[in-house]
Image (cartoon, rainbow, N blue to C red; front, side, top):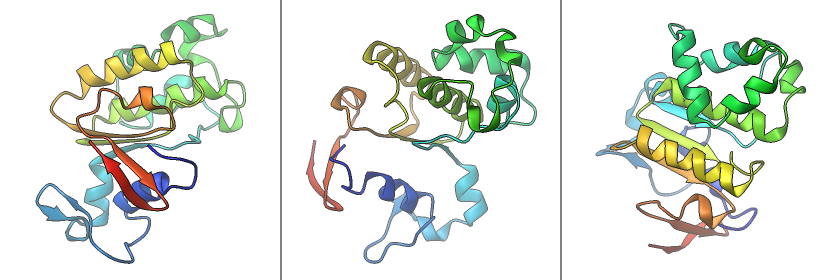
Length: 185
């Protein structure tokens, strides 16, 4: 957590190796990040960016991008986990509804939840969520985080948020300020 410009998204970009650290090093487990082949590292990470990218395809197709072998049952399961099922029931064609270029037919919160469902379908060892709950209300946020806790038990999830409520149940909370860890607990 931290104010705008504190370095939260930059930290995730460093973990994804979009950038190399100018000083210090990052590790995952006992291995420095630069010891991993880039494709292997990124294949082990599911990332939900602040502004998710959706294709002009159906909701189901956008979710299933995470896994080529996904079944409709798999997609429906993660859609429920992302608290999106009720919204899909109201769309004209449900999960088969085309979302338009960049998801223009969906609200910001719906786009974020499609991206969360996609990340959950990937079932990667490391989940990065970059303020991807900002467009949902706190009750929806709580339901999604509850689902994440159950689905991700024993695996790492890093949640970046402006809302302290999004990280209240985290094992460790870091407060960033001006690119540095100002507090932790």
